[in-house]
Amino acid sequence: MNYFPLFLNLHEQNCLIIGGGDVAARKIRLLAAAGGKIMVVAPQLCEELASAAEAGKLIYLAASFCEAQLQNVRLVIAATDSEEVNRQVFEACEARGILVNAVDDPASCRFITPAIVDRSPLVIAISTSGGVPVLARQLRTQLEALIPHGYGDLAQMAADFRDEVKATLVSTDARKQFWEKTLAGPIPDMVFAGKHAAARQALSDSIKADADAPLQGAVYLVGCGPGNPDLLTFRALRLMQQADAVLYDNLVSLPILEMVRRDAERVYVGKKSNNHAVPQQEINQLLVRYALQGKKVLRLKGGDPFIFGRGGEEIEELAAAGIAFEVVPGITSAAGASCYAGIPLTHRDYAQSVTFVTGHRRDGEVELDWPRLVNPTETVVVYMGVAQLEKICQQLIKHGRNPDTPAAMVENATLAKQRVVIGTLSSLPQRASERGIKPPALIIIGEVVSLHDKLKWRED
Ligand code: SAH
Image (tube, rainbow, N blue to C red; front, side, top):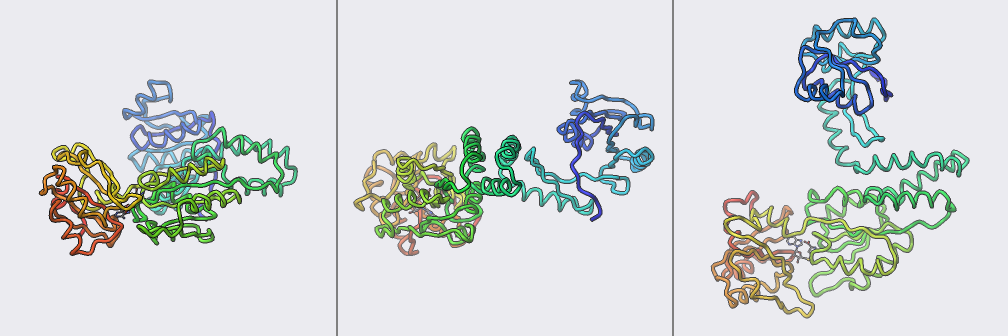
């Protein structure tokens, strides 16, 4: 190891920065956040630093560097353009035992600064020992995506309870077990969901509770988008990696399922049109049963759970049983199909509104409010409409929509096997049947479909 990693308490400590440009400003932001007293020496200041000086947030000395400025200084950063000045600063600091860093000049550094992921009070520092800062930054970007923003709040909350835990649980082992159990339980998720008061209450309760007390179950109703795993939300991904049990249906693609925690129990509750693998009522009851066993249950749904997803029905049952639940939105397939097929659902020249309807009815017949769907400046997207495509097109024409209105079918939207069939209200049914289009597919009707030719960015 070339450098010893440490975190420095700079509160009220004099920090001297040589240089007044953007690089200096970047370093000063962090030093100030850590509570350092900032002094800047430079012939002139960039705008950001000038206004900070004006606001009294730093002391500014309009001068060049000289050794006398190092009096009572704890830490120095040289952020000048001149290697020579940086060297001079370094040597002067070394002679006095002052910690010194010259930006991007490892030879003139006693310490180097890491790339950081800041979830204060939790801070992750990454360093390549000055070798490849870009690599450290790339890793940082990955961690930024992986670590929920609520981690800072979680760390703060745990710190706030430290004394209470210490006073209640006397042995180190008991405390270790307590924190392991607590941090693997539902409390972090409460914090991430912004339920801070509830999380504090739960933490306080569990400190007092018997270690054997049953765990709290919860259900997460998560939309996982149209099938392409890149379109998952961060929240969905995190919950997928924590779940004890996963209930999923046939719209949840295999690559997505593979991202679920390996040792989670998997239950397929899929249904294909008219072929209900598990009746809805049974799914609802399964969710309740798992949650009552204290499990973290993930109910994965294609697209968005509240758009033709019966998400509402499932959580009604949970609410009635007093089970904690959370709903995570997903990209609905209409949005996925629209983007991946190059068919904007609205467009200033073609469509001022968009309506989502379902082609599926409980008794198998399409009963839509047809007169409402014939406005030529409105896009209509039909979910679950493959079997009824011909009827839907006929009805729209019958109620006054122009038979030449462009219309498309998008099958397996966002996946590598996506297919797009373009036609008009009168020609689409035959074209779709020639191409053998099967569910899952969406019908998009309206002038916007004519943009596909120009805006498509994938092969049909
Ligand atoms: N909650 C889901 C919709 C469930 S209804 C959502 O928000 O997308 C099921 C219907 O969604 C399917 O019949 C089909 O019309 C549509 N659908 C879901 N995934 C799709 C995909 N990848 N490509 C095209 N249509 C899809």
